[in-house]
Image (cartoon, rainbow, N blue to C red; front, side, top):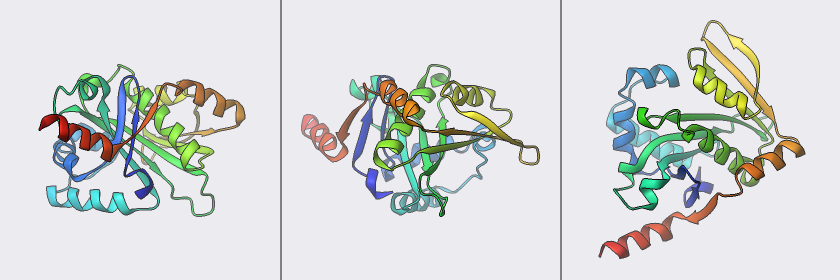
Amino acid sequence: MKINQNTVLQGKKVTLVPYTSAHVSRYHEWMKSEELQRLTASEPLSLEQEYEMQRSWQEDADKCTFIVLDTERWSGHTGTEEDCMVGDVNLFLTDMEDPTVGEIEVMIAEPNCRGQGFGKETTLIMMFYGVTKLGITKFEAKVGQENEASISMFKKLHFKEVAVNRVFQEVTLKLDVNEQQRQWLLEQTNHVEEKNYNVLNLQTCASET
């Protein structure tokens, strides 16, 4: 999605940046994991296919993607952006009859970053972006039945379980963002800073020269 191609959303634990070609190699290594393939219902792709996928995601009008960085490492410049990657988050706008519906998908790929609130803050920031920038008022999440940690996280964020698909072993959770939920979401994300990705990259290049 082009709308977020220059957007950085910096939180306390995580920072969301646009998915660029610089991230593909690390992402490709993640997706070789059978565990991640199972949890995300994904098929392994070749490196070239991953680059093609990244380019299509950047252009697609119905998919908003961010790469998730470890804020502490990224803001401290303790490595390259690729070194700071911990996962990704997607928002699919695929309901042609209702453009206010967004399906959210979160992956914290680095095992040592799970169970520390990275997924929760990532989800909150993406919901904030969806509500304030994309006009989303209804969220949906589809999670594998075995992924109890993810199901529990969504429920803590006020999602309700609405369906279980025994065939695909998948749980569907939904959240309607009424005014009360919107205010709660804004309170939970009032620390988030929006920055310009190109400007930050220019500043980084300047500091390295």
